[in-house]
Length: 400
Image (cartoon, rainbow, N blue to C red; front, side, top):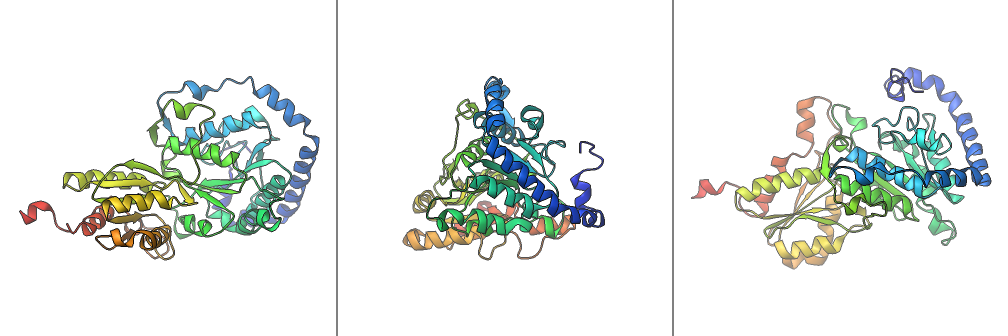
């Protein structure tokens, strides 16, 4: 379905039209499952395709030093599919439409419909097919148009993918990536604006990653695809078009970032600020504002939500003696709450001030633009929290 005037986007926004096709969905999913299993059994077509793809020139290796997050994800998918014939992509609009956010642009033309598979609107169906393919030794990448829609497939993600390796005593590894945009977009309301980092990171058996920059996106997605365990890969719609510097090392096809390791984006000595995904950019902007007022902030980009790099966080807090956590999720039982618990358990005696948590307002996301801004963390919220932690709630000029 290549006509952009009639896409899955339009079906998402037309519930009556969507409901009219649900009677065909189950049969379509079963048919896709049979086709996939036949391809697994054959093997030859994929191997032949791989030999052909070994000769493909990777344009990204000579790309400019600036790269958008969208292109970084696309290049990672491209290179991993070229390197391993077991890797394939499936999801709504990933093929003919080249991805709802154009992350899979050009992949259908290069790898064909056997490895870039457009699915019906049935998240539970195609997520389950992906898990079954992983059971058979393939490495599926399942794209959700947004992780809000992954609610339809949460049983497949948590129970079928996340627990099978443990329940089989290690005999059934599930190498699968569930990826797509997560968190608040813009003007899409309460049902399309949730952050699922805390939801999935509470589940043993899953790994949960959330990149911020282009280099993060490339390195983490490659690591996720190669990992033997199921990975929930949380992107952010509002940074897809943002450009970031990319090192020559990151452009190497073998580049990977380690899962479970945070990155210190900026060194500091007065307060530690932890963040992930889009909020890393907000934390860095807050650090700039704080620096003008004499407060040196250390900014930690978590990258990996599960496993969480507790060592890096606690080492930083033991240096700065203060902590501010930032996230787009809800405050109760959030990622920030887990970080606070870790610091209290391991570094309590180093704290010189109460820990500050910045998160979404504890309400469903409003639709009105002005209310939406009030519900989502802003740079000024982080600045105020850091000042409170440093006992500098008023500007230095006011106390002079």
